[in-house]
Amino acid sequence: MTTPFHHEPGTVPPPQCPAHNLDIGPGGLRRLHGPEAENNPAGLYDKLRAEHGTVAPVLLHGDVPAWLVLGHSENLHLTRTPSQFSRDSRRWRALQDGSVAPDHPLAPIFTWQPVCVFADGAKHERQRGAVTDSMERIDTRGVRRHINRFSNRLVNDFCEKGTADLVSQFAEHLPMMVMCAIFGMPEEYDERLVQAARDMTRGTETAVASNAHIVAVLTRLVERRRAEPASDFASWLVEHPATMTDIEVVEHLRLILIAAYESTANLIANVLRMVLIDPRFRARLSGGHMTVPEAVEQTLWDEPPFTAVFGRWAVGDTELGGQQIKAGDALLVGIAPANTDPTVRPDLGADMGGNRAHLAFSGGPHECPGQDIGRAIADVGVDALLMRLPDLELGVGESELRWVGNIMSRHLVELPVKFAPSPQQKLDADPLSVMARTPRPADAWEISSLARTVPEPRHEDAAGAQPAHAPGAPGAVPAAAQPASAAPAPGTAPVATIPRQRRPAAPARLWQAVTRWWNGY
Image (tube, rainbow, N blue to C red; front, side, top):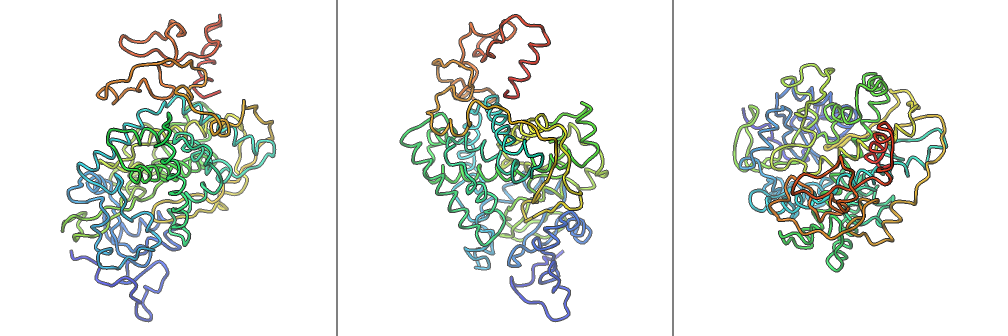
């Protein structure tokens, strides 16, 4: 089969040509942007699959040609074979011949940067190693406590009113609050940062300016951490033995911030929508047969936060899904269409509980390294919201919900809900304000922990275990403070205890205390 890309970008079709349809471009190729792509991406994927099979030619903004990979196995091959499909966008033939200008709406996504997602081989291993090593130092239990506090702070803003928009008042803010705390820049959290993160991936006229704002915020952070290291993710990247430059650190922070924010905001909104609308979710959650993490996993199959990832670039001429791919061609990892590939999921209504074969976090060497943090934000955030407002109901008809989409994602514009008004929950203090004005010692993540000095772990012991020097990591409490039932295994650090847990109590009260501590209450 010959390549269908025989037209020039921007070519105007002849009169009476069906390409005058907004969804059809030059050469009769379907656009991956515009009304159909934004309003009914699933229908577009079905048409492309019927017309071209598992790999389909499409048009990006400006009618720039690319390939959308629809098949599950083809996407796995695409992501797992960097020798054939590189992440280095400088290979893109459209960039080399000038078809794509530097101010293209998708420039913030494809413009090459010195980060691991645009690298292959040894450079990718060095940079990604710094990211994954630093993520392993994050104390996940401590983060869950912060997620719960942030969630309750957000719910306090609307719980007394009886109505809310869970997209603009909850889903769009919680991930940014958490990431600002993890990065070590709680003082930078504001509405402008939230909106800039949302805007820069949408291919808008203001996307480049939004990107510049985020880079400026992160540049200030890296400058501070070079001068004054702290116990936060930015400092760990700065200090990592990979010796990344300031530009590399800024760009990796930008990459992680945007990927984590966009994906998690969409995931939270999608989970809440399905809990409110889908009878399977509502009945099983309220009946105790489905946990929130299970609801999250089902949502990752049905409504993945990223519908596609741009991109991969062909290293040489090759074949994929029966299509002839030319060297320098651009390809998109089709996450949403892969999750609905009939060969792996013939019944879209089937329960996918326990099955993590979805591609919501991509795959191969570039699979999302922060997916567990994203899951934790969604799990704890949704659980905290439902615990505070158990009688949530959709405030409008399901048909009235509106979506906005682009080549990478599709998200709800609003999710109006109604509920019985309830009082605010007392918080010790505003979590972000306290973090912004208070130096963060090594035990800051575990509020109840007592600080003590622990030896640095050997580098080879870091993988698969929480480093003892991570903020709030196990080992921040003297061994004598541990309950007898929590005695550590030989050679491991002691575990932080729960305040007042050691007082005489019935087993039921003890279990409630443990549950509340885990959820951050």
